[in-house]
Image (cartoon, rainbow, N blue to C red; front, side, top):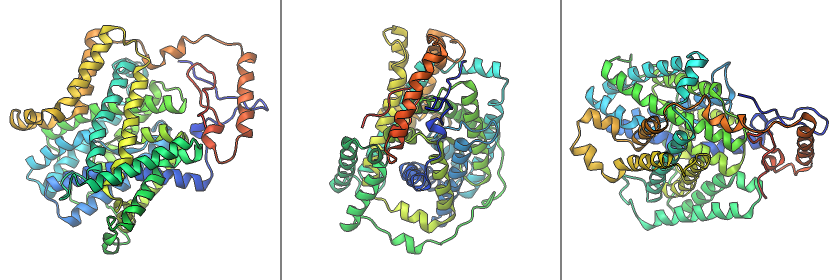
Length: 508
């Protein structure tokens, strides 16, 4: 696949792509912290749910959360910074996958619950992580053949499914958080609605800098209002330790059992589809061409992070769709913002007291911001599907039927709870699992295996332009970039479209 050259500056030198731009330290810190706040609830909810289901003590649960945050930080830095041929070098935050929740609970309870259950989970997680890492090192030709399973009709459907499945998570937070004694209290919806309205007003103002921190300002503003009204509690901050060090195999040596390993391998197959879709989605957003090698590097980071998670008392990792939505909203494309977010996560993982401050954001406030971001994830999927010829009935069927399968666990939960074997239910009781599997299988039935790098086909077909003609507009664009205000970084440097021409800058 032909690569798109970086734009030329007015002096004729290649300028830095927005993805590789290192922003000033204050902006890196601000934008990075916004990513942390945006993903925090999604990051900690998995250890909370799994730990609660296995009957862990409060102290063990806090340790599990800190271990998760520490590993999230390390994994995000690996993915965004890159180590050799590991990491996509894109603004992708790594977090624990929701797909693994039900299978891990089933594995843990089957092993007796408590820390004994965790040890079996960790054995399966480490094995699945190593297998994923090894898979992503397949010879390029073999890997490209496998990647034909994921043309735009599949990845677009999976991203859309992710957004649709995540929106109820945001709405549940907006209602006060599942399991809370006052779940559904109108005051939670008031906080959610106020936060959402504030974010939308900031976006409506059209100032690029305000747009880029709108989620952060919404969370801070909503929390401040809740604190003044007595609904944001910071009591746990004083009760938390200052330092909490995560050590490998804290709960004991992992145990390796064949059925949990098989179950976790299936989970990782689904997460590979998620990461593939997220990689293409963020590539479209930031104007970076994505090929099979980029996807392979992203999957290697997933596998390495998952194996590391099993060692550091955490769980399987995936590129977080929530933060893809944030990149789209803020138009801050630098991958070093994610590196900064990773540093913040490591600090939070080592400082329980600092993590307790972030945890004090009320559910309603968090739900208002999360619902906006999850909706933007679904929109990113719809934009990917816009590349697909949906007038073709077979493509329309792939999308429509896959969405129907994805909604099955949420609409008919009794099927999985009362009329299905527990082991099978633990695997299938996930909208992402069913939707992604349906998309892959239906695409194979109707379209078979597509061409290599299906996502890149439109780029390959783009008409060639003589170098002098191609250089001129790029130089002009760079002049405009140099003249742009210093506080509008994302509007200053145009993203690259797949056809080799500068994509239009975000409108102010």
